[in-house]
Length: 312
Image 1 (cartoon, one colour):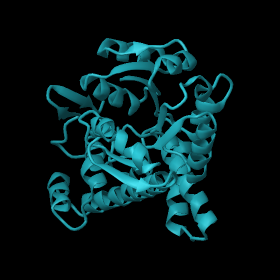
Image 2 (cartoon, rainbow, N blue to C red; image 1 turned 135 degrees about the vertical axis):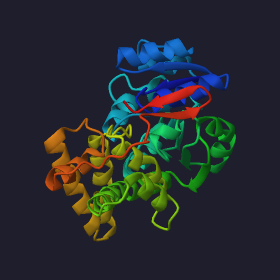
Image 3 (cartoon, helix red, strand yellow; image 1 turned 45 degrees about the horizontal axis):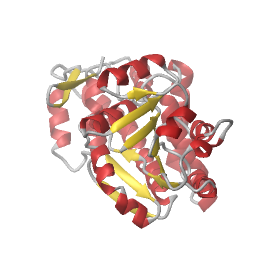
Image 4 (cartoon, helix red, strand yellow; image 1 turned 120 degrees about the vertical axis):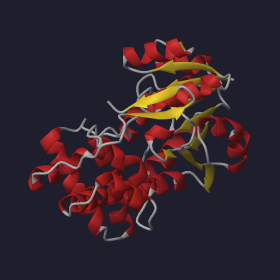
C-alpha cells in the first residue's frame, strides 16, 4: 500500500519508520527540510506538496501539532481532501478536540473520503518500538479493515466507537500525565530535602502504589537533567486548553486542571513554549534553590534493537 504521511515531527518521524520497516511504501511531507531528508534516508519518498502526496497515495495519515494545522492542511487552500481519491481513507493521528474531529469527519465524507481518528498515547519514547497505544474512533468496519495497519503503527489498539470518542479520551490521558508530572516533581523535591537517595527513592516509588507510567518514564529525565520528554510546553498547554474547554462544555468544574494549566503558563513565560514540559519543575527547583538530580540515569535510553533515543 502507498501511504501518504504528513507531519514528521517527534512522533510522525518514528511512525513513518515503523511503516517503512513493515514494508509499506511511504510518501512523506513536512515543512521542515531536515525532517524530509531524514525520512528519505530511511527509505521514504518525499513529495513537494501535500496535494502531490495525496494524488499518489492510497491513504493519507496526518500527525500535526494542532487542530488548526490539520484543518489547514486537509481543508484549506489546496486542501488534501480535494486531491485524495474518492473512497480512500484519511487517518487523523493528531491530538484534536472532539468537536473538530467530528467536523472534519463530516467534511471528509462530503468529499467521499473515509476518516478514522487515531490519536496515540503512552509517551513519545515508546513510538520507535511501536509500543504506543492507539485510540481509534470511526466506523467499525473501516476500523476492522485497517486494524493490521494500526498494529504496525503502535502497540495496543483500542476501538472507542464513534468519531470524537478517541479524541475525548486522548485529552483526558494527557491531563492525567501533566498532573502527574507536577506531582512527580514535588514528590522528588520532598525526597531530596528529606535527605533520601533519589535513585533509591525512584526505585521505591516505581514498586509502589504511587507509581505510574508517566512517573517511570518522565522522572528519569528530571533526575538526569535533560528534561527531554519529546513533548513541549506549547503542546501541553494546547491539550490542557482542550480539556478546559470540555469542562466548560460539559459543566464539570475542573479546578485542578486550571491550576496545572496556570503553572505551565508560568513555565512558558519563564522558559518559552518550545521548552520540554518538565521545565515546569525547574520553577520549583529555582524557588527551593535545589536541583533534583541523581546519578545512574542515562542520557541515552535504548528503545529497540540497536536503535536508541538520545535525551540530549
